[in-house]
Amino acid sequence: MSEQSPQQNNQNITWQTSDISRQERWELLGLSGMTIWLTGLSGSGKSTIAFALENTLISQSRAVAVLDGDNLRYGINEDLGFSASDRTENNRRTAEISLLMANAGLIVVVPKISPFRMGREYARNIHAEAEIPFYEVFIDTPIEVCESRDPKGLYQKARKGIIKGFTGVDDPYEPPENPDLVIRSEQGDLPNHVTELMKLIEGSSF
View 1 (cartoon, helix red, strand yellow):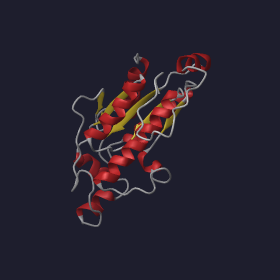
View 2 (cartoon, one colour):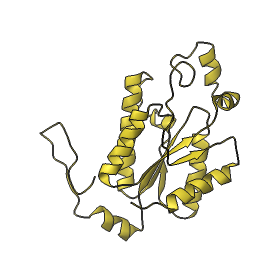
View 3 (tube, helix red, strand yellow):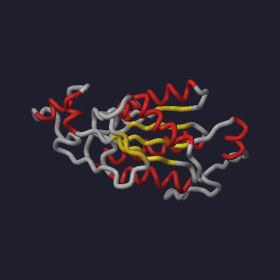
View 4 (cartoon, one colour):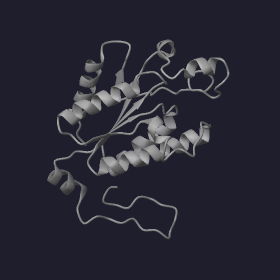
C-alpha cells in the first residue's frame, strides 16, 4: 500500500502500482483515509455507534464506509464459522479490505467483536506499514449490560448451551491493552460517543 510492494509468498504475482500516488489522489478528491476499528462484546453498542458516526460524517460530505462484522458474514466471510482459526481469517480479511478502502481515501469504520489481540494488532500493523492511520476503539461495556440488552438473543442461547463458543460466555475476549480511545456505551449518550470519535478523526495525523 505504501510506495513499496507488500510482501507476498507467491512469486508468480506482482504488485501493480497506480500512476497516481495516494497523496495526489487524496488531495485531488479532498479525501483523507483511515480506519476506525471498534472492538467489544456482542451487544456492547459497536454497530449503533458506528452507524451514528457514519451519519455525522455523511452530513459533512465525508467519504465513509462501515464494514460491519455481521454484514461481512453475508458475503466475503460467508464461508467462515466461529472457530479460532476461522475468526482469525475473518479478522484478516476484514483488515485487508479496510486497508484497501482507507488507501482509496475513505474513512472506514469497522464495528467487529474481533476477540483476539493478535488479530487487531495485525490490522494495526498492516496500516502502519502502509502509512495509513488506524485507531483501535474499545467499546468497554460490561458483559452484564450486554446481556441485559441481548438484541439478538444470543447470550440467552449461549447460556442454555444452544450456541457454543460464544465470546464472553464460553469463548474468550481479549480486551485491548492500549486502545486509542475507550467508550463506555452505558455511560453518557450516543451523540457524546460520536463527538469523542469525531475528535479522534479530526486530530488524525500520520
